[in-house]
Length: 337
Figure 1 (tube, rainbow, N blue to C red):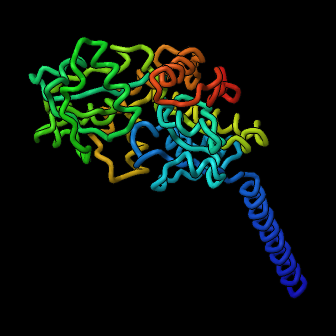
Figure 2: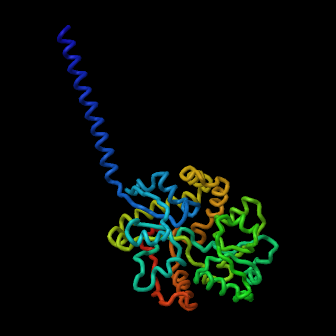
């Protein structure tokens, strides 16, 4: 009996050691798997919204992990995403082709490059309450417009209004302090520049009847890319494979959002619970047809369209320096399938 008890004790001890060894191996394996993930940061252009859904989908559904990346999504500092990316504090960021223009010129040009177009066409334009006669650029004459007082903004507006046969000088400009477009249109502000996917859809959700015209519909040369994903030039040069892996995951995230707008909207709302669920859902449905639109592949840039916009800025003297064709963007890292 004593021998049997001793044997049992030895077996139990051996099994315990074996189990501890297995747990140890499992823990070590988890640590190894975790160590394989490279930390990457992407800084947004603004507070989270449906422009960013593909990023949150890629994070939630494990696309980034599959690519070997531990991606941190952060909100921008006051001086914007481009400065943070240029400094190397973030490898990637969200920016806009029009905002990038000044950053790409001069002796202090920022070392950034656009590597993917989140939305294929410019979805910005001018919105107003229905019945105010601002259904085209010339209708802005004699009306009150909330301006950011940016040279590039005013150059585009002047061009649009004059091209449409209106008098740009008759527009009443007031400072833009708008935080809620739907509410602002109920005041003495007649019209505001918006990105339709968010502020335009917000007026629909609130059942406010509006008129809206898109910039690109009156001037194809203003069909610039907004928003885009930018990368730090040094990081792109030194880490081409990781950049491609990152964009593979991001593309999968946006393609999921295209095919499953409701599910994608739910993911964004769970990750950012303070967002208006109804607005997110309706915006997501609208953007499902805009992310890739008529492009062969999500994210790709049309070099002529990119260059034409910067050439237009130079001809209108918004840019003092003429940019060489191909400046500021690349399709090199995009997965083309």
